[in-house]
Image: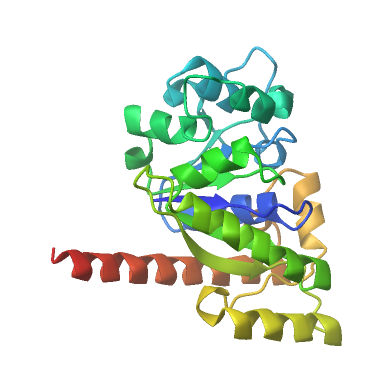
Amino acid sequence: MVTAVFNHKGGVGKSTTTVNLATGLTNRGYKVLVVDMDAQHNATDYLGLKVSRSDMTIYDVLFDGLDPHKAIYSTAIEGLFCLPASERMINASLRLNQDQIAIPSARLFSSFKKFALSSEYDYVFLDCPSDLDAVSANALNAAEYCIVPCFADRFSKSGLVNVVTAIEKAAENGCGTEISLLGILLCNFRSMTKTAKRNLEEISSAIPEATFQTVIRQSAAIPDSIEICKPVSCLPKSPASEDFEKLTTEFLVRTNKIAQITKLASGK
């Protein structure tokens, strides 16, 4: 199962969500791969990987047809793997759009299909850049589901329309993945403020089926965990570790429910 973690706004918790949800699933015995698609390589750094310019990364997969297995690294967490990114991805979108032969938004999908990558992991997460560009399009076209982290503020709320529209367009890509919105996730949630509560209520009432019941509360444990390159579950118990544990459970419930519905619909 391939899930993109996407929002065109930066600093809303995409990499934090990707790494900590992936870790939560790994802690429950699943084999998980994190694919970092962002030139800022936050997910790569968060997982404690130090990548040099000579190391194979997602860039080589997209532009040189590299077998992605050759660019996957193990992490300090057993069962959790990473296909990293580096600064080489800075001009990736521009280069993708200059390709006159290949479909610029389908390279990742083609690579996953050619090398049967997703079948080797229980869950694959794609940490997307904060742009509606060809790199994000590659992630959305390769994914089955999308999680949208956002803040409970006015700007994030208004930007959700563009994000949902992008997901709907990706669902019509013809690749066969038919991505769907798995859930909107409220991050850095300040439960004591009336504004945050009101925006949460408005988002939940507008798209109730696509809003996670779990919210990730504001917690000092998150910046602390990023600083030492360890997921929050590796630190002493905190509101953040409790929230990501709940998110892991809700993620499994949501994906298993969708899988069951799909199975019934197909008659298998």
